[in-house]
Each structure stands twice: as structure tokens, then as C-alpha cells.
Length: 292
Image: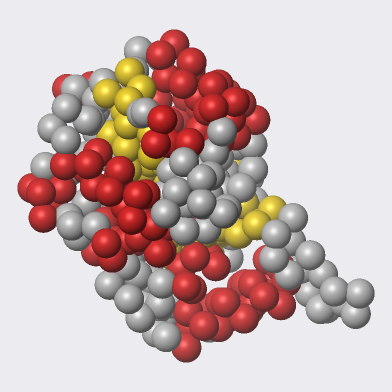
């Protein structure tokens, strides 16, 4: 994933919800302005109910881009829901031999999990659908991830310890991860740094999903738990009794590993790129530092 690898042509595909030409316009210009070439055709704007075409069509487009030698990366147009319906239709035989970055977040967590199980890094980052709403730092981080530049982020939110931790980072959206439990798309978590983020959920839903991961044995042997954006999280009229951060921490507080909140990635304007399936370093203290 660097300039020497020759990332030039980036295909745009919609694995889940439908998109319109107007929603893609900003991202297409942004790619061109930054020296990349976008690859797509009218199939990108296919519609079947809420999806960007039938499951068979969406899978066939992504398969084509995975297998084409002239495509250097695949940028998923948006999330929503639908990736889990097509992931098992895809043949990764050629892709494993000649991998290329797959870029996205949210529902694209399905692809991140699958690729991590295959030993292939992928980029958790902003998508074309609402690219215009992202911060300059988020946009630059995606360029840096694509061109192999060093990723370095700092944020201030105290964790449960002070330390430096190195390890392979995996994860993505919490609810999507829970939907993948028991499948060959769920990432290996033992000995890994797990990153999670969430949007538009109730506090008790988040806690229930954390318990689902815990009861499935996915949280006990982490190197660290890194929590990104917890965006538009709701409470009930009858209050749950604790903030969402505390609800998450209480599920894992008996485990002996670092837990840190506020990482600048997720359903928020400042959605910095992370290369999942690749080693990362976190320095946790008064100022937290991520390096990759």
C-alpha cells in the first residue's frame, strides 16, 4: 500500500445500499485532484429496493474488480446493509495471490474481517458517499494510507493504564462484528488489538453486543481494546444508569489489557484511516498516540 506499489486506478463499488451520481460526484473529483483515477460504470447506480442492485449483481461487480489486474484498489461507495449477503458469493482465490486494498468502514467491516482471516490488510476509512463531510485530517489520512506514508494520530482521553502496546489491529463496527460471530469472516482476536466503533444504538444494545463478544470468547485474550467514535448513542426514557463508555469498560474491566476511548475513527467527520490486519503501535498516556 504505497507509491512504489503503483496505486493509481481505484474502482468504486457499492456492496450494500444504493447510491446516486450526485452522492459520488465529490469523491470522484477528490480522487482525480489527488492523482488517482476512478473506475466505475453505470452498474454503480443500480437499484433493487434499498440495495445497489441484486446480491448477484453487486457480488459480480466486486468479483470483477478483485480479479482485474489493472485495478489497484477497491473503494466501497457506502455502507448501510448488504455486504454480509454477498461475502460468501465471492471467490478470493486470485485475490489472495494478488491482493489489493479494499477501503471502507461500517458495513464494510464484513470485508475487513474476511480479509484479516486471509492475512490481507485492508483500509478502514471514509467512503465516497459522504466524503465532503469529512475533516481535512481524515481525507489526508486516507491519502497517506494509500501511498504508504506513516500514520500518526494524537488524541487526549485517559485510558485505564499508561503503556505502549504493539500488535496487529483488527475490528470495525461493533454491530456488524456481532452479526459475523461464528463465521469465517469474523477476525481472529486472540493476541490482537481490537478496534470498535458504533453509531445510532442504545446504550443497552451496545452493552449486549459487548457481552455477546465476551461470551463467545472474543475479548478475553486481546492485547488492547481501542474504542473509536460512539456517535448518536441513545438512552431510554428510563435511564440505563451509566454512560456508554462505562458500559463497555465494565464488560472487560477484569481483563488485564489496556482500554482506551476516543480514537479518531468511526461515524464522525474526523474518521482517520487505519490499516486493519497490520501491526500498529499505541502509546497510551495523557496524550495518546497511534502509529502505523
